[in-house]
Amino acid sequence: MNEEERPSRRPERVPLERVDEYTWRIPRKYKPGMRVPGIIFADKDLLDKMTTDRTLEQCANVAHLPGIYKYSITLPDGHEGYGFPIGGVAATDYEEGVVSPGGVGYDINCGVRLLTTNLSEKDIQSKLAELTNTIFENVPCGLGSRRKDLSLTSHELDRLAAEGVQWVVNRGLGWPEDIKHCEENGCMEAANPDKVSSAAKNRGFTQIGTLGSGNHFLEIQKVDKIYNPQVAKAFGISHEGQITAMIHCGSRGYGHQICSDYLRIMERAVHNYKIVLPDRELACAPGTSKEAEDYYQAMACAVNYAFANRQAITHWVRQSFDRVFKRPAEEFGLDLVYDVAHNIAKIEEHKVNEHTRKVWVHRKGATRAFSHGRMEVPADYRAVGQPVIIPGSMGTSSWVLVGTPKAMGVSFGSTAHGAGRMMSRAAAKRRFWGGEVKKALEQRGIIVRAASQVVLAEEADPAYKSVDRVAEVSDKVGIATRVARLVPLSVVKG
Amino acid sequence: MTVKKRFEFLEHTADAYIAAYGESLEEAFENAALATFEVMTDVEKVKPETEDHVEVEAHDEYALLYSWLEELLVRFETTNNVYCCFKISSIEKTPDGLKLKAKIWGEPLNPERHTRKVGVKAVTYHRMEILKKPKAVTVRFILDI
Picture 1 (tube, helix red, strand yellow):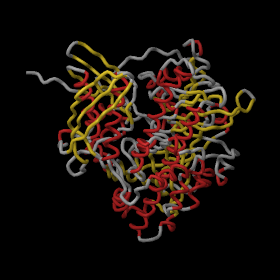
Picture 2: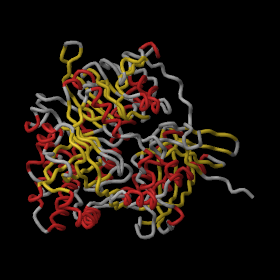
Picture 3: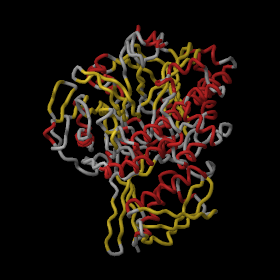
């Protein structure tokens, strides 16, 4: 192995039992404190990659959490994170279990939304460069960027955090029908801005309406292949070659600071409530405690901030179409299919051993994938199931899938969220440089506008696992089945 | 004459894993700050135009390192100033732990002159280490990207 591929610390071998081709179990007896086994949904290749960092050890550690039900779940895109692996789900009893900010992640409600249009590739080809440039100018992205016409007062930021998408739509930055196609209708009602620190608010003021950097992006795409025409049609995806737009970003510094603040509070809580943990990064508090309640209310503010952020960006994407094609955005459709979160904790009811239990579901780098019939799924989709959107990394495909009854049974209604990195940023920067990455994408016909050449190199396609594989495993396990594959025509990156 | 390395980036799949060095704890902390801004921009292009003061308190050295870097991150995101020079005047014991006082120098981020790299979401305690030998302090930590 050359230097880039050698892991920095060789992890211990975690024992694995094969359940079936795509399911693996870490037995409870592996560590004395494990209350439940670990379960990994992956093919052999994705599983092998998980053995090169601490993913599996972390999966086993999460199984120690008080009140955890069934098993600690790692999804096909799993990789090492803070305490919990990224690409994981853990459900704990609402009364007897714990809540942990590490089970949500720093980028609270990092998520994605998909818009469809009534355009095909040929309709857009001649204007694609101009459209991409216009979006790049309208949607602030990259380090230190801000949208000057959307600066908020202290009171307005609190209202935005309390109301989410509704607040943004009321400001004229969206259509009323957007709201019902968001997870939680774009607003978690538990949000309480009094539980958010001034440091978080100060970070949040200037960043509303910005894409951020790193793995966040905005793409104009086309439908490459439809796998399930009936469900695709219900979602508004009618034909191959159809133009779509995808927005992937989170709660920015507002959410990141909330996570940091509450990790500190939870560390003290672990000590006060005498919770024994194999890793201090699993810092948590009992679900009935003040600390957990405060975290949930602050987390909900960050969730709403991210929903609001993606809504504002949606508006500017629509405006960009308007400006470039010189016709109102409505004429192109530009309807919101769905907005879904990847880093979140929810209070849900799930069947555990024939009983219905109220649980805290932690989804960290995991997407809710509810089946048809569930009331949480928008009425428009309730007959088929919840749209699941898995963004690929820059320049690779993205996926639309649908939630299933199987997911309700085996993964607390969850599936993967993306591809997951496998090469460090440092190694990616040594191997690639931004200009070459851009050129390679352009040679494939993909237009790129990026705020940072360095980030382009770090986000090069080979630095990520294969999202096609992740979507395939999700489909084969049956937790979310493939509906359509999308490919990028242009990419805007911070 | 060999120039002592002030910091380096270690291998980590997703985030910035940093090792910063110094002859004293203060110097290692200064270089940790330098490394943090190097993640975000090319620090050599940043001019020390404005001077700011920082004071943080924490219950131990780990928490102090965390609070120091977090304060710099919050300062950057709220003022849009990037910093290139750091001088810690003291790290003193208090009844509750430790107190750090510093001066920092930098200027507003200017996309025309400054390289824009990747934003830092948070400082973490993940794999944080403070190793002290005579005249050789190493601190290691991970920044969530």
